Structures are given as C-alpha cells and as structure tokens.
Picture: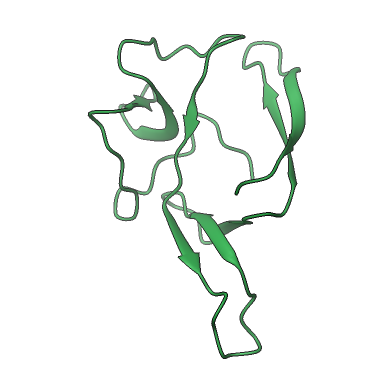
Length: 114
C-alpha cells in the first residue's frame, strides 16, 4: 500500500494521542497517516523521525475458526478505500520511502513489528 499526503486518515477508526504527536495535514486540510513530534515541521527530511499511524489492531491468535489467519495485526483502512491493509507482527515486510520531488527512493529496507 502506498501512503502519501493524499492518503486520508480514517477519522472514525484512528485514535491518536495528539498531545504526544502532531498529525500532518495535507493541502486540503485533511489529516494524513503521518505524524511528527510537536514542534517539528510537516516537511520530513533525511534524518528526521516520523510515525506512520495505524487505524486499529487485533489479536486472532486464539480464534477457533480455521478460516481466520492466526496472529496479531496492525490495520489501516484509509478514507474512501474499500480495502483494509493488514500487517502481521513478527513477519518482516519491505518498505520504501520516496522523495516527493524526485520520486526516487530515499530509503528502502525491511521492518519487523514486534
């Protein structure tokens, strides 16, 4: 899934401690899935830290239904999207951070959420 400033935060699902994080808004004034620490600018540069907000999480490790994937998951369901993006804990996933001006990768790697 591609997250950028046009990916609008699902306001009905997301819970953000806005006293600890500043959610970045896009040019239309909509909240995005990106957040920075208070006092930082909304321009994320090389070396900056940011948070990618999730809408929800769930734990299905004890689910009795064999059709349900077992595990713990973070989920995203952007406004206007018919799909839910799921990320399972303890399973590596690849990511790429793109420079918005050039469209070229700034960083690529693998993360495992624990």
